[in-house]
Image (tube, rainbow, N blue to C red; front, side, top):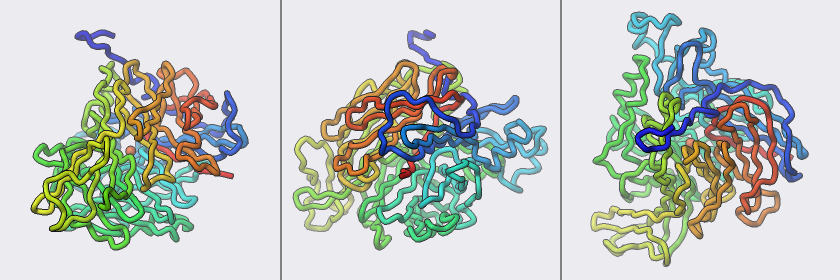
Length: 529
Ligand SMILES: [Fe+2]
């Protein structure tokens, strides 16, 4: 469709279908799956966007649907099930959207009576969280997660929903990220914000010893806290960095307007416009020593940027000076209240996004004192454009280098790495592009050393976040495979699990299944022997 000279594309096809719940069924495998690749692909995302006459209005509001591909001895089985959240159960009971979400209104009675809503407000908040963003595994225990207070434990075999953990009950935490890290020793870390008189950014932790328990998230404790500079407007975050010695996060100009946010929840209104950019703010990095929980007392400042996803972070030394390197994925679009997440936009033809995502690398000097040279660049690496300049007051101004220069790749997002390289110097990451020129998408393997990427793309196909699985015995970072669930712009075409050779980024095999499945956000691979 042509409008004002721009090509417009219907992005809703395929992406916004209602998912089919499926008991395990055999997939049709094309190609040859490596005999070492045995395990479960588990992925999470919104699976239902309308009930009866009602439509969700925000992509993050759709009912959480978990799908699974079980790979065993070269064969693949598919299954999928909705998370039985309170929101899902209520909405399904009445076949209406009574529990909306971030961008959708809620109603306390099935007649959607506005007066009833008025009298019910301020008495209780609707159950909005259905955890459709990611999956966390602590040992053999699995949770569906979102950027919120609730996590749903589910059975990874049957995909049945089991128990609910509410961080508000456990630690009075209203928001924690959907991207926890698991340390090399099995300790589980996440980042959470608290409101009110104790407005803090908190690192929270579940020790590895708890992962053998039935519900390990119940053991979550505060590891360390940093005061929020303006308790009424803490930053929004969705991910953070974990290295051998440090935890770091990005304090960005995108802020949560806390009074408005709480009022919207109390009045059953969508809270998405409580998130706002404060153009007067720059971005800061906060760095915490993992062992002591103490914050590095250095103000790291850079230009204001928005970031959902850290790519990776690691500690390094340049000319005898220690740095924490942080790589951020900074898309040109991505604010929660921006057009690409609003379903009424996605249901209509849209203009393809052409502004490329920036993948920025920052070098944070870890020691600064009176002997540190002032107002000169401390990052002296040939070919690296990053800068770190210390000022007289001890603060540090950072300028990023770009680690991937890949024009015409659409909006690249959801970066993944070989997780064995988390917190370590690394060369590759894998990403997926959305809203590209034909309405499909592409997978990209990025080589940080050459700042270039190679693509996988197939006409009509919409791949999901690529997940790397290392080959047993691998000695090279990209020795393994990359997995992606691929849907089609034509929802009558089969869904398939794509299996790529990570080195060459070429297809080894695919496992097709006839089902309805919309786009998923994040997932994991559980290795099985
Ligand atoms: Fe995410």
